[in-house]
Image 1 (cartoon, helix red, strand yellow):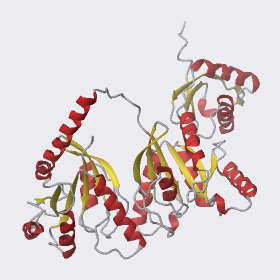
Image 2 (image 1 turned 180 degrees about the vertical axis):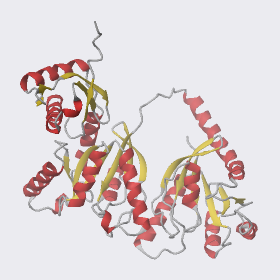
Image 3 (image 1 turned 45 degrees about the vertical axis):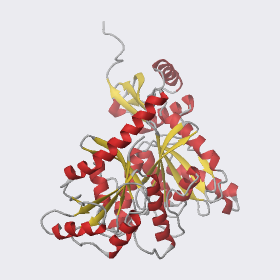
Length: 455
């Protein structure tokens, strides 16, 4: 039972800055523009010896006007329902506003403890706002500066009793159950990526069976890369919903640049990237550019063709996609393609088996014996070419790591091996051992067989 703390407050009071400070990383986007945060984001917070879960939310606003704003408030209400305590942040430099008073009245009626934090208290400018915060009737405010890390000791003092209370309740449950906790491997990390408005967030909500992230017809609804813990057929999955990636030449606003960087970071730390395409336009140049970036990062790739129910000539569309993949990504053969409709849930049941299979191939470890028998067959069938009148030699191969599968071949004069022969070795490895659809790294290294003793 983990203690969950939800951070609330009107827009631009420093909620995401405090979230990043508690988590120790720049996980949430921070920008002076109000309303940057839209979906709720969870993270593992550390404060002194306390460890707990913290939830960043969209800014509380009185009377949202549009569909998007209403969805943002629904996400905030869902976060409050899941939390053990709420932390209301105000801007001490701006003082108490009518919106702060309105939501203080609302929070006094909820069933969980509410802590009051006055942010931006560095220097003397925030002192009047700190004292004014007593008017909200939520107890003594804690003055901090999330940006500069000031006041965290005082924040620790008010959070610690709540964390200890939750920990005691958790220990009591564990004692009664008598079950032993089992050590498990880390979750499979899966990033859902693609251009704007192809249905990434709709697909994530479809997989989870709930409206976990905000969706809408307009492009750019998602800004942060939102992570969600999920269990699929007993497998622990960490899902990342990401912002849409446009061509770099079309990105001018600072906020969109931050969102793109967040998406690229999610790809870097993912195990499998699901590239969502719009089936009505199929693979455009930007789609292929994203796919190429996933491969360059060494991640496993699964392509999900969304809006398949709107495609008329499906056979022609698939031929077009396969042709473009073969031309643009010749170094990765057999990328799995799943056709689906996230809006109607058709075909989505085939996505996760394809993801799990790609992950299993991505983590494959091959024994040294079969690898070297394969190498002997290669040398007999297609020996290395001549270089400067002398035959190049391959002596030994071993897999040095997985994720992605990486091999080292000990050879004579590795710098003189042509790239075409290295590609031939990779393609043969892929066909012989069934390493389809994931990147393969093959490095040539000089020296003798390290497992043969001299003499």
